[in-house]
Length: 364
Length: 197
Ligand SMILES: [Zn+2]
Image (cartoon, rainbow over all chains, first blue to last red; front, side):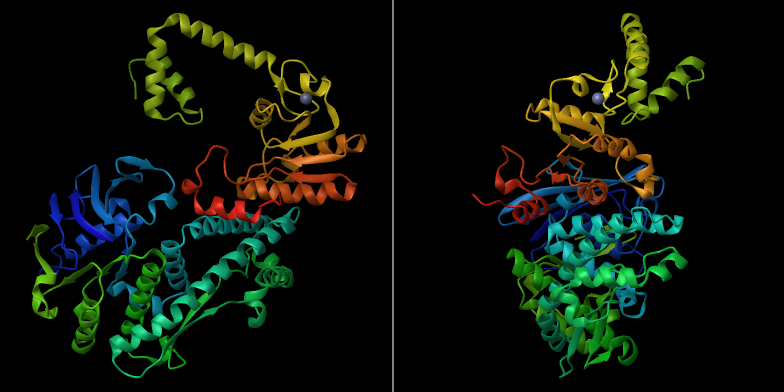
């Protein structure tokens, strides 16, 4: 999957521009706060309709403009499609080949992106919801039906929570059954995804860190009885709902289910959050992202594009070099932001396109 | 917004209460009506007429001018009843000309989020119809949404103990659809619900 060209209009501080990209490494360099990351963010938005910086439309649209417009020309299996995203104060409208896309599920997959940015470290140290969000998004990009399942689950959950909050038990068991059934399907898909990337994660981590450390990940469910979790998660979740009835009544929310589950990141069998250095944590997250890329490549036969934001501040010199060497062996398009070109190891110059960014202006 | 005419502003306000009508559409409709006074009278009359004559059938809660409705009083199979969320769902099934039984409009689907509980649906009336004893099968034709599915499950639990057969509309790939364009979730459901030949 190659993003050949992008058109940007009234987005953040960027001047209106159309940029053609190379099929391998594209490096955006310049001083801080000039617009490098905004450029990367525009690519992420075209792929996901979301900002990796959790920004709202008001922040994304250029100061004083009514709307912002992003267009990308994406080549996949020798076909180029034009995807566009109109950012208005009230919402976002997506088009593929000039046709309006109404369902989010239809939009996903037209440009698969995986991002590695300084914000990602929050995933290790932060609350479980950041890790769940990562996991769910990683699964959507490889499995379109997961989005519908996810939306269904959360709708059931909200309905059930409303009943609990109102103390209304008429019909509660129907919502409990639906929650258990849908939740079990969600858990099964999550566990299946993790078991698929587990081996990849370990390999990539050793490539980046370059030592014998072992990276692992486990799905941490609040449900007891790990043995039954895979085979019979529906019945298990249903029993757990029954058992937590008193607590639910008291608190007015559903206290068990995939919406409470978490991921446990491990290094040499120990919890990453408590037992690893910042460098190790960053390498881990990067390896996790690389595993996601490989997973998508294996499923669709083409890799997504990789966005590396401010990579050199994230990884030390040796890890950066390991990463660049490793990426050079992979047939994939990579976008990198950096404050100085010297930070990015250029081995094979013809693989690189460089763009300098100054006060929102992109110079080739 | 239109300081020039209070009545126009009022009309726009009323139009915007209609589903799918926003500021732009309301303006377009209002100006269209302004230009054709004959249409305005006809429209106003038919609105009033519908409001006066059309009501819900006291048996099935479908829409009708005569109560009970033509379907409830017609020569139809009394042993089978089809449960739908809205009167328009009933019309959709009637258009297919493939169902000869009776109907019951639930007037919605369970949706605690929107404040709709079993008490807000016409379930008590439905149970009264079952109590009369002629019905042997209930066809659940609620929507295939989270709310419709929850309603179907709720009704199944309620109706089955009465010794009545409960069935659900099949769902899957639409007729005339090329398989290659079917979305993943629909395909998954279609495979789960596959039938033996
Ligand atoms: Zn009737």
